[in-house]
Length: 202
Image 1 (tube, rainbow, N blue to C red):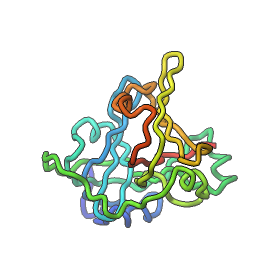
Image 2: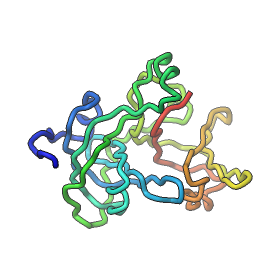
Image 3: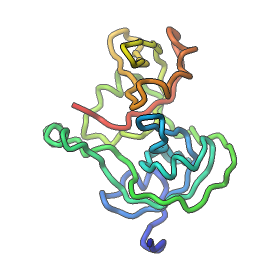
Image 4: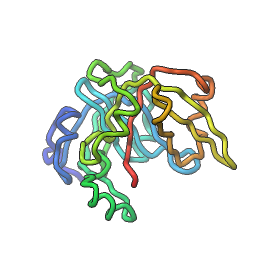
């Protein structure tokens, strides 16, 4: 049972700045869906005209499509894995900016482009060098990067390298890379890319 009046309507930017435990209501367009082991949907990136945020909820992720505009109730959270808590404290990292304990209230079931006018253009190097205390997780950035596919034993990583040829990172997924096979055609190419860091790890 939930009481809608307990949830305060906010823009996504305002929700991002809310305190851990605050009950918020946001409206946004699904920009991306994340997947757990077995390629089971477990969360979505929601975008409005102000910012983006991760909504960690398998039920919602399984019932929406990229491009749907949805209304969501949720609890503001800064997630930190138990085995990362000490390092998070050491580097003043608050945790992954997201909503949990979420409830889908409405879905327009339309496919729309999300608003990207607010998205900051930056570089992989600048993202990697940001202080862990900055609240950047689940915020989308626009970068130019070299995309590289690297196959391992039973898994595939996709790297995004800065044009300085020194700095980079890769997409971590719970599906051994199978949810990012759409990147194959960009292997070895410099691309304009929209990406986000969902979490920071030591």
